[in-house]
Structures are given as C-alpha cells and as structure tokens.
Image (tube, rainbow, N blue to C red; front, side):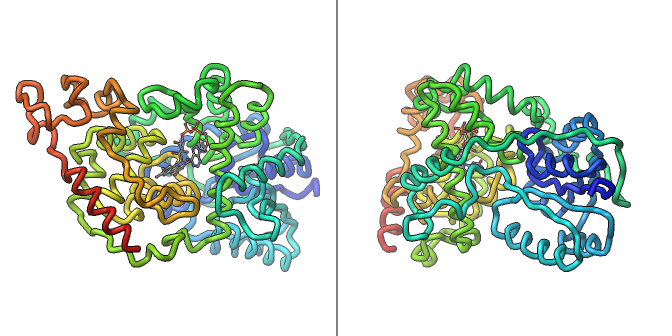
Length: 465
Ligand SMILES: Cc1cc2nc3c(=O)[nH]c(=O)nc-3n(C[C@H](O)[C@H](O)[C@H](O)COP(=O)(O)OP(=O)(O)OC[C@H]3O[C@@H](n4cnc5c(N)ncnc54)[C@H](O)[C@@H]3O)c2cc1C
C-alpha cells in the first residue's frame, strides 16, 4: 500500500478534523492527492455556492500544503465519464466520504462495483452526519415519518456508539501530482459583482467554523431557545454554510455541545436533529426530491404568476418582513430561519405559487443550500411534506413582523426605503398615509395581494385536497 498513491475524492469535506476518508488515506499512503471534480453545469443553478466552493478550494489548498498533500481540480462534464477513465489507471487506491443524497448513494454502488471488477482498492467512509440514515428506524424496521420519535431514537443511537475514534491526518513524505489537465480555483470562482459582498461577510475556512461554534457556545447558546426567533439579533449559530460544505463535522458540534451543561444546548442539538431527519427522509422517500412527499398535493391548482414570482424574488411584495428576508437572502447568501418560514408561506399560501419555484430560487441564492434541508423545508412550509405544517397555518406577514421584529429594525436594515416609517406602521406602511415620510406606490410598493383575501382563497384551495 505504502508505494501506491492514495487518492481522496473531495466533495463537501473541506476539513482536516474528522475527515475520515482523508485521514485513512494518509495513514495508509506516503503520498496522497486530494482531487475535486468541478462540474460547471452544476453551479449554473447554484450560483451563490460557486463562490463558497471556489473560496473553500483556495483555503483548503493551504491547509493541505501543511501535510504535503496536493489538491488537484479537474473540470468534468460527468462524474461517470471521469471515473470510467480512472478505472484504467493503475497504482492508486481511492478514498471518499459518503454524501447522503440518493444520486450519490446510487453512484457509490456504481463505483464500488467497478473498482472491485478492476481490482482497485477503494474505501468509503461516513460523511457529515451523526447516524447513517438506515441505522435509525422504527421497531418494525420502517423509517420514521415524524420528527420527535425519530430524534429520540437517533440521539440515543448516536450516544450509545460514541466515543468515535479520533481521525488524525498524518503528514505525507512529499507532494506529488496525479492528474493531467487540472485547473486552478480561480476558474471556479465567479466573476459577478453580487459575490463581492460575500467576501466581507464570510470566510469559508475550517478555523472560522470552529471559532464560530465556540463563540456561539460561549456567548449565545443559553438564550438560543428564545433568541433564535428574532431575525434582528444574531441568535443562531450561522454555521449552516460551514456544515453544508463540511468545514465542520456535526460530530464536532455534538462533542463541543455536550461538554457543557448549558440551557439551550438541547434545543440547538434538536435543530441538528432536523437536519438528520431531513437526510433520512429524502433517502427513504426519494420521490420527494422532484415532487410532493404527500401525493395528494399532485393535483393542487398552483398559480403560474410570473409577475408575483418576480416581485417575491426581488423583495417587492409590499409586505416588509417578506421583502426584508428576500433581500437579506440575495445580498448575504443566507436568511434567518423564522423569515425563511414567513417568505415560504407567503409564496405558497398567499400567492399560491408552487413551492418548487421557491425551492429553486433558494437553491440558487443560499450558501447553505442542501437538497435534504431545502426540499424538506419547503415541503414543511407548503404542508405537503412529512411532519409538515398543517394547511390551515397561514402566517400573517403583518403579525409575524410585529411579533418577531417589534421595533422594525430588521426591516429597516434590508428595506432602507422604509427607514423613516414609524414603528406603528413599519409592518403595514400602506396605512401610514403620509407622503412626506413614504410615498407608497412610488418609493415602496402597495401589497401585491390583500392578506385577508389571500388567506381565504388559500384555505379554500387547500381544503379541497
Ligand atoms: C423553506 C426553508 C428552506 C430551507 N433551506 C435550507 C437549506 O437549503 N440548507 C440548510 O442548511 N437549511 C435550510 N433550512 C433550515 C434552516 O432555516 C437553516 O438551517 C438555518 O436557518 C441555518 O441557520 P443557522 O446555522 O444559524 O441555524 P441554527 O439555528 O444555528 O442551527 C444549527 C444547524 O442546525 C441545522 N438546522 C437548523 N434549523 C434547521 C431546520 N429547520 N431544518 C433542518 N436543519 C436545521 C442547520 O444545519 C444549522 O446550521 C430551510 C428552512 C426553510 C423553512
């Protein structure tokens, strides 16, 4: 083994700590090459993530240098074509961590079958998850469809099997190269102006992820159960893009959390639990990736209104809390969870637009986009998912704003045209009727639908199914 090269296929694993595949490769080989397969087409509909991935490659290359490991980026049209040519190469063993999406799980089967046939040594490891999705099931062996019992079992299962073995990366004896036609991360990084803003807000490094976690645990977790609902305060961890791209492993989060006995920790870990639940759902019920989990929604008469859809995407619906959320998303690549629920409910229930449109837009703009959370999050909001919000829960955007952004500070931050509007009207500026403060209809739109009418229309439509 020692004289062969160890190849590690890097996907969402931009970390040194708890990178099980990479650490095993360095234990078994003196020379290791990490390779990333850049599929340009993939990022055409995930534009924000192109920036995160490009930056992550830049930063991770430096981390790997310290271990004498080289990082090679190969541009590919299809993973299959790339691996077909790899099957004919010799003198390497290959390692990778699992990605918990049905397509990847299926592809792992293809790879392992072919590596076996070609007599090439391969090793597949646990990815960024606490439990493998098929490890947690009901007594009768079927998957959970409701979160609370799922998490009760999942948590217990995980606790019973820790402590996990530490995975340490060993230093290789020298840097080597393996692939021809490699590209530089500059080719991955996007050129658009939109992304310049991200540079000031995010540092996609493992070190930053660990610091953010520690900062959250030391200063914010005790208040988490309450403050997580208020979008104007930084009450949550903001770790989601780091978790998605693997700058931090959820086991590390778990371990750091259980070391302390603070209020708020259980609630925070339960949110990590929702992520586990969502991964379990899309793998057990893969039909929900391209459609409704609940089939009775297949007949729902969605409204195909491009004008409304664009107003929603641009943050010009006339409902300040909705518009603030949509603009926060566009400008920062992230949106507060409470506001994700409000804007989602508005799209699906007030505008009666198919949740799939919202899911697509989030996919393009979110730095933390992942299939499991985004698809399940949208279906939860629409009411067609497993353990979803009931159809009659229609968030009132005015009351939600008044409850969770009392002073209107979140709205004023993202919708500056409302900065002089008094608190009393900040969530219903059309009632202000004072052109000197706000010329409604010119400086900021009138609501595109009237809340009460839209609510009744939605109830009527949803009741039918
Ligand atoms: C319509 C909709 C779409 C969403 N799309 C995504 C998505 O693409 N990617 C994504 O990571 N999350 C998504 N979420 C879930 C949630 O909004 C984000 O995970 C959260 O806002 C991230 O911020 P944070 O890291 O500060 O969260 P924290 O509150 O600090 O939570 C810690 C971690 O737990 C997980 N988590 C938190 N809330 C949820 C949740 N409701 N469901 C599943 N996991 C959760 C995330 O990994 C998060 O980073 C979506 C929610 C909705 C309603």
